[in-house]
Length: 233
Ligand SMILES: [Mg+2]
Image (cartoon, rainbow, N blue to C red; front, side, top):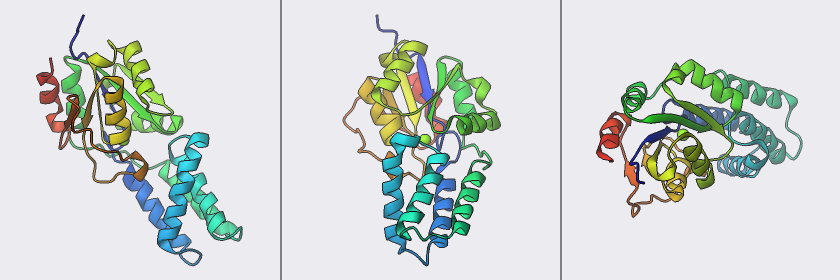
């Protein structure tokens, strides 16, 4: 029997709080540290390639990013990168792991409003300890019926989570800033996919907008989410 929409999943990074800006600031610092060793665009290309190839070993998050910076520094200097620079990269990674949580507009209100009528889940990927820290500091943890920190957001991930903690993908919606992970993957699983763009997007998270899908929606910010959820039977 069709239950209608009963469950709403929220992404965390750059949906509820700022995240990508810390990666981009550190990336700028990385480029400065290695300015004498590599041309900027080449360095960024190599870093992105390292991040892509390392995801399967380290997963998403700051730890993997830090290791990818170190690996790239070694590569572009042909093993001659000074230990001082490695030290500075490790310090930069640790600073990222302590960055303050700054909520995005309407984050708390949107979760509270939707939670009145729907089951609300947090579904995020990244380093386990770091995601737990950010959730604790955000003060939003108690609003969710369930928190899932996963290694990858594939259609199967959503199918499993929404089947176990909801009424299945068809009765579920995912809300997030990443077109690939928070919108296209849930739509492929049979969910609603709601894109809430954030100015900064990591290249790996980009995907084509699924404009022809009847279950695709886009919002300027989370302020309009409760109204959208109310519209869907
Ligand atoms: Mg995100």
